[in-house]
Structure formats: C-alpha cells, structure tokens
Length: 65
Image (cartoon, rainbow, N blue to C red):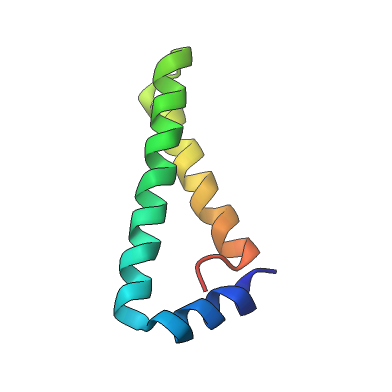
C-alpha cells in the first residue's frame, strides 16, 4: 500500500539517510507504545507483543519496503 511512496522517498534521500530516518521513526513508535503501556500498567511481555504487531503491520502495509 505505502511501498511506492517508501521507495520514492528512499530514492530521493538516498539509502544511508533513509535507513537512519526509518530507524528513528521505528524507535519513536516503539517509545510511544512503551509510554502508553507504562501509563496504563500493561506488562512488558504484552508490550513486546504490540511492538511485534506494529512491525508486522508495517511490513504488510509496505512501510518497511
């Protein structure tokens, strides 16, 4: 779904910068999930499951193209 846009951005900014930006985005998303879980008292194992689910959804949507 988003793969063409991801590939276009990667081609525009270049592979090294794209990898760095993608890593930062993934880290921010994981941190947001962790903060939410800490606020509502969700345990570590369930949080890790949500982070894995987010990764798998990103792959399926083409965000990790």
